[in-house]
Length: 85
Image 1 (tube, helix red, strand yellow):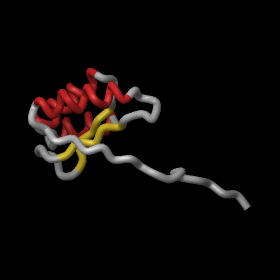
Image 2: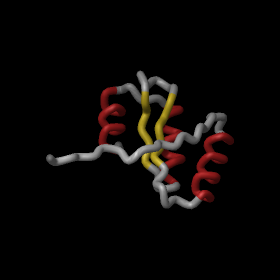
Image 3: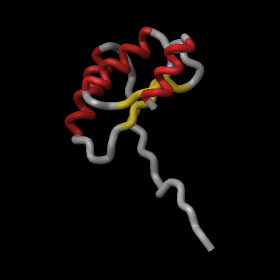
Image 4: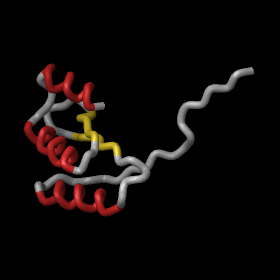
């Protein structure tokens, strides 16, 4: 995700608001990437399953103090599976 975000920055589709989110989440060792068309909008941040809730609370509080809205979304399911038969 970090490499892809870097490529998007090189293409010029990032935005100062996105960079603020990236710097903030990086302080908490979280990986983020813009999603959508860029130029502001939405950023996706991966929260590892084993992360402490305090990390999530701290990063959310800091982002909200900058005026951003945060949404917690959980991904369900087992992901990709390969069956050989």
